[in-house]
Image (cartoon, rainbow, N blue to C red; front, side):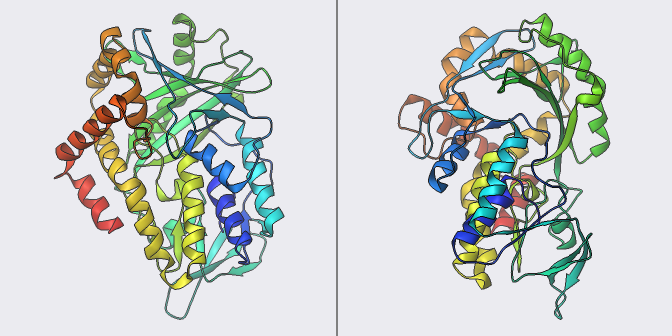
Length: 410
């Protein structure tokens, strides 16, 4: 296991409970911090419950507010489904990741601190392990890459095409602000030109809130510099619109990180290598969620291995395709079309937050945007979300993004 974030730790936990010997490798000692909004979505909450891991100290989060470029607000409900609860939780990543890491170690996973540096190959040329920065050699029957968006495992195994990847970059800070409801903020960085991403102000614990700004860059990673340059302007926008009451601290106390979205450009598994979470590009292209996908795929990868290592890659790839292929194919194509059109981004944010539009659509918008259609309860909101999914799939059916996903997940 290379990487001990939510995906790696859940995979290691399930494998260890299943009787496998697991090395849990990470470059950092836990607890450690991570750039994130610190929200753990409903599907991840269900995984915690099913694995019997209590998230002590977490804060329950229910509905969400979306703020348009003009400051108009729409309340999005957090509906309960048949396979997930009607709430999320807020917990700092330093605390949450340590919780999962400790659970995996308690189950029998063997922790290692070091970078996966020199790849080790079998006689047939396949990847069989790594030499760590500590000098230790670790070989394995199966290698699970849980090492984030810039995955070393994925690169060495030849599973990533960097020219196709949909990259994103996000930066966050903490403020002393008693925020009770998550806010997603669409922002015009100049008149009628939408910022190619979104900002947020999320509830935290211990009297702090999480404030951040994320950008989609497609394959141009140099565009990430726009986040740092725009962070102060965005923070003042939060004050002007009344979303926030406190300006975030200076840049020295901000933390940034890469996102890899929509699966595009990454084959989730081949041979003895399985990629999970951000390493597999499973961040939601429309709203940036990644923890739920990380925990779900970590568990799925472990279960595929326990069912038989020889066929694990095929089983896991089938799971990823069935669970995420439909939504990510549509969402990734939509992101690719939108990001280079700032006026369209601005117009969409304004339209969706009009009182006569956003409020009637709030329930279905929440289901669709948060990828909660699978498991949503029957009703009008589910029907509208399903209709939007079907229409989107028709529109994107002939596109290169859908074609690549069909090929790589087949």
